[in-house]
Image 1: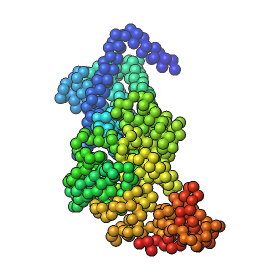
Image 2: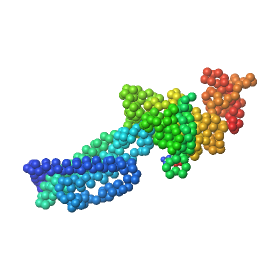
Image 3: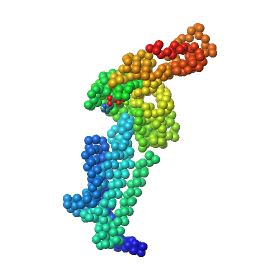
Image 4: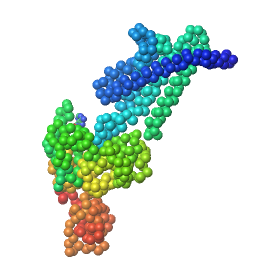
Amino acid sequence: MELRVNVFREAYEYVITNSDRFLEAAKVHLSISVYALLIAIVICVPLGILCAKKQWLTDPIMGLFNSLRVIPSLAVLVIILPIMGTGFAPALVALTILACPPILINTYMGFRGIEPAIIEAASGLGMGERMIMRKIELPLAAPLLLSGIKTSAVEVIASATLAAFIGGGGFGTFIINGLGMYKFSLLLVGALPVALLAILSEIGFSGIERLVTKYQR
Amino acid sequence: MKEAIVFEQVSKTFPKAPKPSVNETSLSIPQGSFVTILGASGSGKTTLLKMVNRIIEPTAGTISVFGKDIRSLPVTELRRSIGYVIQQVGLFPHLTIEQNIATVPDILGWERQKTAERIDYLMKLVHLPENYKKLYPRQLSGGQQQRVGIARAMAGDPAILLMDEPFGAIDAITRKKLQDDFKQIQQELGKTVLFVTHDVEEAMKLGDQMIVMNEGSIQQYDTPLAIMSNPSNSFVSSLIQADDLFQQLHLIRAEDRMIALTNETVTDGVPTIQGSESLKTALQSLLQHNAPYVVVENDKGERLGQITLEQLNLQNGR
Ligand SMILES: Nc1ncnc2c1ncn2[C@@H]1O[C@H](COP(=O)(O)OP(=O)(O)O)[C@@H](O)[C@H]1O
Ligand SMILES: [Mg+2]
């Protein structure tokens, strides 16, 4: 018991005395996560919609991303290393690749899940294609789409820790150092904020999800 | 009378299909008429209907609505001027009932006040309680949802309504009520209705005119009574006769079949029915009172004619 309290106090003191390093790590960790997520959204939402609408695209693209999903995060990082070297950019690429499958697959499922009769009614009433997308399809696909983004966000925040292994920075740096120095308190300085961030993003996205599914309750 | 919809030599062959789903069809639908399209599954009813609002494009021929080729205006504009109701209803589940009904007014950019008044009017018209406005579609029963579907289709005040088996998924009792209510609405507002069904009774009960289809071709286009008493070929006759006599009686109004009162006719103590009631009612009345005939009256109590067992024998009418 005594030991554990000491470890937390040590971790806290480390953060206080090295606040500039801690804040820098937080900034890098957050920005790399947010960028990866945004890039994945920009690529995968339109791609998922396209897959849902063009039958012939579905199999090749979904197959590719489904297999991507099987590859563990660390493996992606290690594969990127010899291709792009170390630093922020390769870490961002690796995280973006990780963020893609849940968003793509959920976007696809969200759009495919819309009853065809709803779309037929909408066009029968004289809605144009873009209006149907904006007023009908997007809102109806939103719950699944958001849950895909939520999964990606949590995954990216956790995996950004591993990005430190290829020099991407972030909270993972403390963990690597802590492991190297057998210093448990330093490990905590990295691990606790990551866990907190993951939980916060989960809560945040769940809140948005609840808002867009109000009509189902 | 003005023609609302005219088909000229219209055919539709789907890609890779061995034969046309609708074959060189010409017909005209007079303004204000309620025309039902009856036929077995796969006979081309839906294809015929959906070509009117260009959900399906014909491969040959011309369709015009109020004298204008439907290809002469943008497809969205055409559709906003034609109401469309389908069996699956297709309400937007994330929008409230009033938002659903406001779809076309919103597209047309109506002022808020005008739209709100229109919603109130339509909800009353289709017999939906006013407090349903803020509910979501899934909170309503199937029958109520289709009432919303009809209100939504009529929101922009279209002169024409296309309906594809709108009551097909609704239980028998609710369906009967919906049929009665909708028929009344149609008569009140003088809308032109093209209504697909595979239910013989529904087609006869609702339609002023009835189209019988088989394998992409119109077999007969006439009033229900004319089709029933004089089917043009064996297909039509077997489709119609598939239904029992009792049901046929139900579809014929007493005043359409009554014969004149004669001097000998005793009218005192004899059962009477209204001219607008069906022959089924006449038969029930005859059996109940063990009378040789019933007297037919109008709603003012004036005697119009009589019906004997002979008028109830439909085989004689053929
Ligand atoms: N989109 C389509 N592609 C190919 N064939 C179709 C399509 N829609 C309908 N058909 C065919 O056209 C024929 C008529 O169909 P339909 O008009 O739906 O009949 P109904 O509404 O009377 O049941 C059927 O043989 C059906 O298989
Ligand atoms: Mg059909």
